[in-house]
Image (cartoon, rainbow, N blue to C red; front, side, top):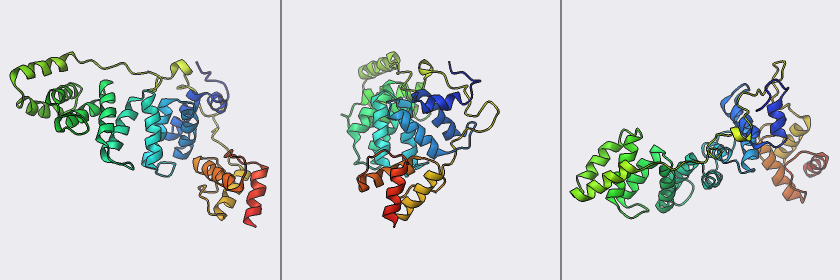
Length: 288
């Protein structure tokens, strides 16, 4: 249980590397919960938690890359983070990854992979995936055409609240003989969802409950990151050299860290993504 009266307890835990706290900070920035909404900061904290294999953070970060919120839109990074989250058991990531493959969004269209991930999410009870995998079985896209299986998934999706699934189910029923239809109905009636991993899907209470902790100080003042003159200087110098660190606002976000890392690689420095005296001196030397 996180202490709610401790000054900046949530941010301190996040800075100390607690992935659940890092995720919660990212979520606050993404939603504007107690702090000004800032997708760049959300991406920063989600990435820290995601690199510690927190699937829900990987999923959230992927959505930011997919939509270009706080970070440049990058479908390959979105796909990669969705895949990491899906492999770890995040059901929404399974669905979104399937959509990327089904629509060929930044990747070659691949109905086989789409079917794999729609089916995985459908097995865990996601209605949209249940409907979509039914369509694939009905049409034989990425899977073998299988009308009884399509009937089952349209039935399950309809029972799960999908308004369009019932009509598709009934249309398929007319194409099957009586015995096959009986078996398909039984399969639908006896289907039960697989139990998902709670942590992978956002129930982080076992890692520390930060939902009631504040990002503000005990006196009520905001504890959002303070702008740094050194970071702002690095941002200006990087822009002068043609890098894209974002605005020279003195805040360390994903674009600034990426630009620093790119420059450090170019200059033969150790890649840390951080601002220090060596970085500033080298930047100034290059600008001259």
